[in-house]
Image (cartoon, rainbow, N blue to C red; front, side, top):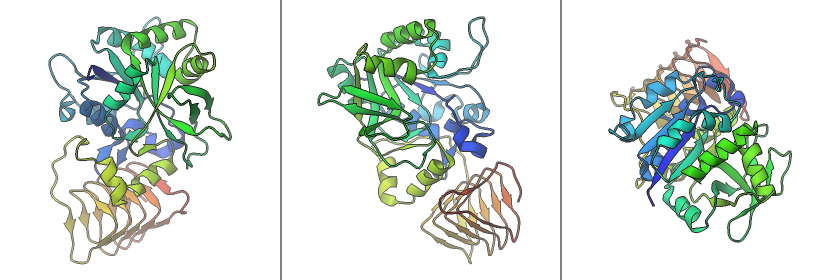
Length: 374
C-alpha cells in the first residue's frame, strides 16, 4: 500500500494573507516557533512512505527553496527518487503563469509521467495537518474511487471571505453534492484540498481538461465529475485536527491554538514526527527579570521582559521592561525596552523600538512586515 508519491502545489491564491506573503509563498510561512507550513505536508508524505515528492512553485519561492534545500531533513535526497522543486518555466505552450492547479499539473506532466509510483497525493500547501495517508489510500483502493478528497465536518471559519468547498457524503462515502464558495451552505463536510488519484488517472484527467481550456481542478474537474456522475469521487473524513491557513486571522488563530497543550500534542504526534530545517542555536535564555507564562519560546530567544500567551520564534530578543501579550514574534525580531505589544504579528527581522506601543483588536491582529522598524 506504500506505492505513493506526493505533489504539493504552492501557487495558491494568497490575497487574504496580505503582508505575510509579500516576499514568500504561503508554504514558507513560519509557524509554531520553528516550523514552516510546508513542513507538515512534507512530513505527512514521508511518514506515509512516500519517497518521491514534487513541489510546484510559482512566485515568491526563494525562501521556500532555501528552506527545503536538497530535502535532506525529510530524507528525500536519495539517488533515484527524492525531492523535486518544480518552478515555472516558459515554453511555446506554457506561459509560466498558472491560473489554477490544473495549469500547474499540465506544466509538470513530464514529471508525473516519469514517476514510477501508482498513486499520487495532490495537496494545496495552505493546509496544516499531520496524517498518515495510508488509511486514506486504503479507502481509495477499496472503494474503487477515481478521486478521494480529504475532508472534515464543516466548522465555523474565521475566513469568511476566503473560498471553501463543501459537500455531502452518501453512506458508502461517495460525494453526492458539492458547493464552491457559497455565501451560506447546509452541506455537512468541507474539503481540506488534499486528493488521492491513481497516477495514470490523474495524467488522463489533466490532459483532457486542459485540452478543453480548463484551469481549475475544483470548478472544472471535481464539480462536473460529481454533478454529472462522470467520475466516482469519494470523501475521506480526516481523523486528526487540521487547519486551513487562508487569511491573517486563520494564521493567527492556528498559532494561538498551539498554546493549547492538548491540540499541540495531537498535531505533533510522536508516532508521526514533523521534520524541519535545522538551525543550530543556543537554548532560549531567560533574564533575571523575565516573566513568561502560557507561551511557546523557541531556542535562541533571549527574554528579558514579560511574555504572556504568545509564540516567540528563534533568535527573538525581548528587552527589559518590554511586554508581549497574545502576539506572534517571528525569527530574529527585536522588541525594545519598555515596548508593548498586544494582538500583533511581527514578521522576521522586525524591530519595535524602545517605548513603542502596538495594541491590536482581539478580532484582527496588527501585522508588521518583514524587516520593518517601528
